[in-house]
Structure formats: structure tokens, C-alpha cells
Image (cartoon, rainbow, N blue to C red; front, top):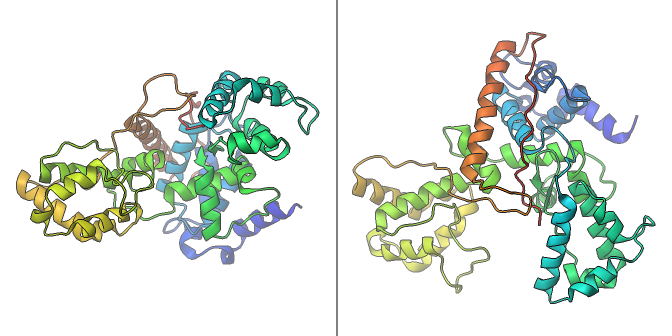
Length: 391
């Protein structure tokens, strides 16, 4: 038995591989019942349902995340939406998308397009030219491997791509590779790493492990799973932060885009402030806060403790005083999704509500099974356009 399979089997069979919360799932529900429920809720027409159930439950168990019907259905809903349960889903028109993005990268890097195209006609490590491989590419994993070879083997690759692979998401849950790498830096990954974390993301086990970590591996103050689904698309705590921006707009009278970004990317103390900070500074006196204190609290926007900050509490108190009614603590961010793969107008709200519909249908089926009953069927999975950010 391979080491990875042996490890997974251990974690599924032995209660010592996870805490009681992760192993029990819910009161009266054993590890075996949780795995059985996952398998029953998976689409009936998919290949290797047992293998998928094993990898999904192993991700719950090794991360000490309770395998409750609610958590199981949240994971299955996101996976169905993102990839229709394919570890490395094909992307329609990926060859054309890849060439368009290569040309854009060349322009941004100041490298002549003809020089990049000439370099791509060189023979790659598998015997074919990079151009030939790009012309035949159908999945993000294949494209990622081409770029890895190009960066590693061709001097121009390091200049052109600055040693950064532009394929940024992957796997069945379309999780960020940067998130996955950061997660492993802070947490133990339970499987042997044959090549890299990037490679692991494109495997079924790795894609589910990191996707579940991103979706469920943090405390969020939400009364509805809809907001966690929005966070999966827009970033952790984006729904909480969008609600804060709404409250700040009420408190200050300054219209704000409710995108969940409290500070511009890479903002530092002496950098130009974004619209959210400017709105807060406009009412600094009413909030009884200094400019530096406001900036310091806004920097906690990616932290679970932000709602305990002075700024958060004062803004909501002021907003409710102005409006004369309670102000929501969570709102789906207003974000239009942009990607070379997206051919129509899609938003974070569209994504979150689409996932939530799948989640609610899954819960209905889970209640029918009740975690203990056998049998039952799951409807055919609808094919949807993938919602990811490739380059």
C-alpha cells in the first residue's frame, strides 16, 4: 500500500488520528457514518465515489473540522459549483486563453512578443515544444506544468514570468495555490509531498484538503452559510468587512463600494489611503479615534478579532444611532468577477447564492438519509461555467 493511502486509511480508521470533534461529526454520528453520508451525497454518476469520500473525510479528520451534515454539504456544494467533482477540470478554450495571457504578460514585462513566441518554439523537457504543448492544453494542471518547465529551463522564462507561475488556482475546489502554500507553512500537511504544494493542489486529495481548509478552517461570525460561501470567492471575512463598510457609510454619509477590502492591497502606514479609510477619517472625531488608531484597526480586517476592535464597535454604534435600527453584521460583497475564463457578467453574489442553492438541496437529501439510512439517489450534476481566477 502506498504511504499516502496508508496514512489516509489510518486517519479514517483510528480515532487517535483526529480529535473527537473531527471524528464524531455530530452527536451520535460515527466516523463510519460520516464517511457513508459523504458517499451517499456524492453524485451517483461520478467515478470512484468511495475514493472521493475517503479524501473528503480525511481532510475533515486531519484538520479537526467536524464532519457534520452542514459542513459536508457546504464542501460538496462548493466543489459541485467549481468543478462538478473533477480534480483537474478541463477549461473550454484554454489554449486561446493561454496565448492571450502570454501576450499580455509579455507586454507588462516589456518583453517583445516575437521573442517570447520564439522561445516557446524551443523543445521542452517532454520532447515537444512549449508552443505545441500550449496548443494541446485542456486543464490548468497541464498549463501550470508548462509554465514550470518554461521558468526552469529557459532563461527568458525567469525574466518573462519573474519566476512566478501565473496559474494561481486549481483543483476540484479551485483553491488559491498561494493560500495552500501559506497554509502548509503554518500547518502540518498529512500527505507526502512528492514535488510541491502546487502539484498537490491539482490532486484530488490535495485539492479537497486545501479547499476545505479555505472554506471551513476559520471562525467566522456568520448566521448563514451564504456569507461563508461569499468569503470563499472573495476572501476570508469579506462578508463581515462588507457589512462594516455599509455601517461606515451610514455613519459617515460617504458612499462606499461594499467589496470587503478595508485597505488597498499592500497598504502601509505612509501609503495613500483607500476609500474606506478616508470615510473613517472623515468621522474620526465622532468615533473618538486618532488617524493612526483607525489605520491600525483597519489593518485587522483579515483578522478574526476585527469585530472586537474599537473602530468596529464605534462605527456600528454610530451607524445604528444614525439609522435608528440594527445594522447587519454580514453582507455579501459587491464584486464583479473578472477572469479570462469568464465570458459573461458574474458576481460574488451570483456565486454565493448558486452555491447556497446547492447546499440547501444537499441538506434536504442529508436529512432524508439522516446520517444512518442506506440507499437513496442524488440528482445528476449540472455542468456550469467554472468560476476561477486563472492568471
